[in-house]
Length: 103
Image (cartoon, rainbow, N blue to C red; front, top):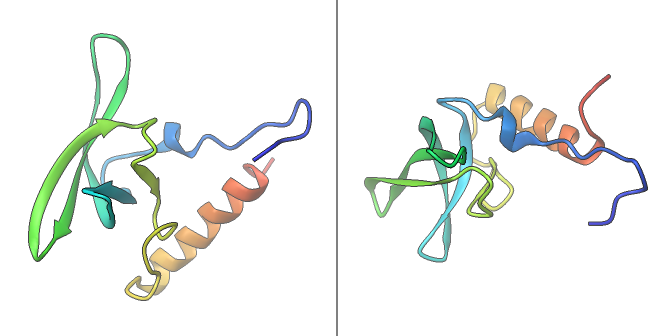
């Protein structure tokens, strides 16, 4: 995705908070997950502990927040099961990623 010279890309990953919902890739499949914990390691790398449902069981994975295994909610999973409030939040986030944050 090429950006024009001097443009800014919205860094949604730096805005992640506990209880944010995200798409998580695990074992080559995408799932809806929720951030349970954020940590900063000794090297300064930020990581997230994410809970998600896989085959009816709750699982947890801790991965760096810059990993391509984490994406905004509904980028790789369906919007069908979201409530109206989550749909509004997801649509707003998708718009910010596409156009950048509002000034």
